[in-house]
Image (tube, rainbow over all chains, first blue to last red):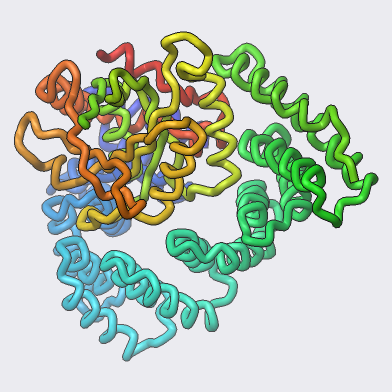
Length: 307
Length: 197
């Protein structure tokens, strides 16, 4: 990834980067899945121009697809058009991959009927085409029909239970609608699929803490797990200090269910997070603000809650 | 009642939305209340992934320390409101979460905060037309009362600065709380914007 970032800096820093530099950079973006559609739109078309494309060989088609997808995302149909046309020319309408791009071109200009008609055609031939089924969900979302998108995505996940992207999208939809219990369920699936992801553990912790019946201790556990995977992960540290304070506040307000032992663990976790956060922000512009915030929180732990 | 918005605040809102054009984005408005009018001097961009209660609390706790407001006795800036931009450009509604947040902020700050929405039609509008609009609390406890937002010193100046920054792809440099929490070295206060003024 570092090599790729260096290459990007070189290409962007030069007033006329060489074709091979551009080719390597675009290849790196595809292989390492770095999301920079702006680079594909800027450097793809010069690479694909007549003459230059012949040196790419078969890689030209991958670059065309990359440029088309990037241009559609950035709402540049005039850039996507020629690449989609080139792919249609080479692979024909028999190719479902190309038909998906044609459908996305319709989506980009808001012609959802045309897009859906094409997707339904592809799915009639092969109902198991995951990418096209996802496009149908995307169309619903683009139209603001979030509940319908959820329904469609649930049907998709019944079949493709291990698809990370679908669970992520379902999570996003549920969060947008405000179904936090369902969002928590999605995050639990994501954690099961990627147990070594500090991000999913942290987001699960955040969601547990936000439920109507908050699961604060579970939230704290997932923050701890995130930090054991990624020490000093800022998001997990922020989440942890606030969850620990919430636990103490809840115990202090007389709510049952927190033992003295657990409060000891809680205080120790907060101390740990405080030390890590202080070290993380030392010498930076937020050092004083973080210190002051933690000092305020310290008060919550100073007076033990009365049962 | 009208409100004013400084160029730094205005461009940060637009750059935040531009950086994450496919997502809903939001943030805190920072400023002062002068003679009953809210003057927005700066913003702290918050989220583009999801606005979770815990992270919102974490961001506000830090923001309070950075901008303690006039409670501290001085003329210091404080939190004066909340901004958001919807995911879809045709969506001009105000999501319930935005109203809940600005209600809560008003409760904590002790005065009616300002709700600002970035609306996309304004981005394609005429020169001098701002792409933000303001809302205040209305009688039905919603936030539908329109508040005129003026740019200070002028809409043309705000527009020109935004044009210049968008042309140089400056939105890639904008850091929100989500970005900062992935990499604490990224400057949440976006000091680089002040340097561009």
